[in-house]
Length: 336
Image 1 (cartoon, rainbow, N blue to C red):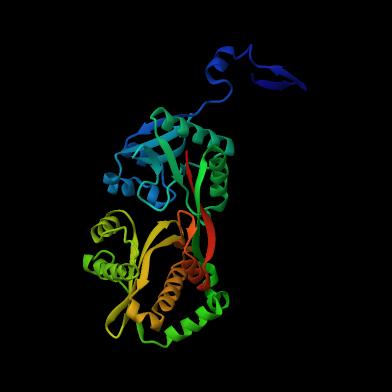
Image 2 (image 1 turned 90 degrees about the vertical axis):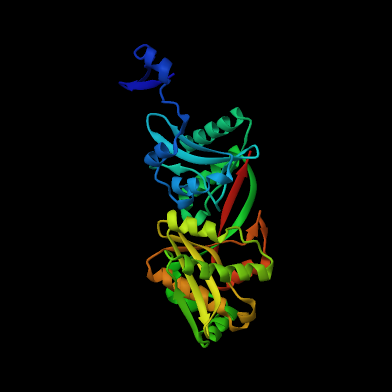
């Protein structure tokens, strides 16, 4: 029942609005609706590129079906894109993170209702639900609220340590890095390296950087999850990207692939060096050069990515990132 104040007394409005209350019960209830990709793109502006329709459609073949969902009452409030695969609805289904796209500022109560509706939608289809949020550094206030809601409504599958560089600190870079990293940087700065920013619209340039990364992963036994064709399709159609190679005496000795993923935020997708040149400390030179580049470009954050796999830390990688001036925030993954 709803009430209002009249002359200091609280009275029921039910006799006045009985029929209306039977329909709305004082508050418009939210509902969930499946949209077409075009309808979704017109309704929701993603906060990061991995929640965009363009990125999703490019990766459509990695899911059995796609669900473009809008949660709304009289207004569209929350959007989420789910990829259906192996009995689970996933956000993301082919990206580092996904989560909700929000229109305007929404209350914690509405966020809870949105998650309840999403869980009911999955249950009606006999599907489980999996959601991985952005690292907290992307929007600490909003993502902390989502983490609170999802922790209570779902199960925490894992918590990853995600590293980033606060680019405002780069002006005093040598004061924020470890002593050994400072020594390695000074060593690298005395080596005749040449950093080249490649043309991301040229397939040959993209392939040049990719080949260095491929060799790096092969030498270290790490998986390379994107083929050259997938990288090219992504950067030529959907994502603004930068590619760099570091030369030494005419040889490419290190490279980096960076995506612009959100306002003020770029993300290192891949970087690495060729093992035979590691003693020259090319990675110390490359990392500092990238930090300076994006600081001077006016970005606020360079996302270096997680140093955990399903929550299990790679201690050496954690130590390297901390030594070169990275900070860490959490990235939560939920299932139910």
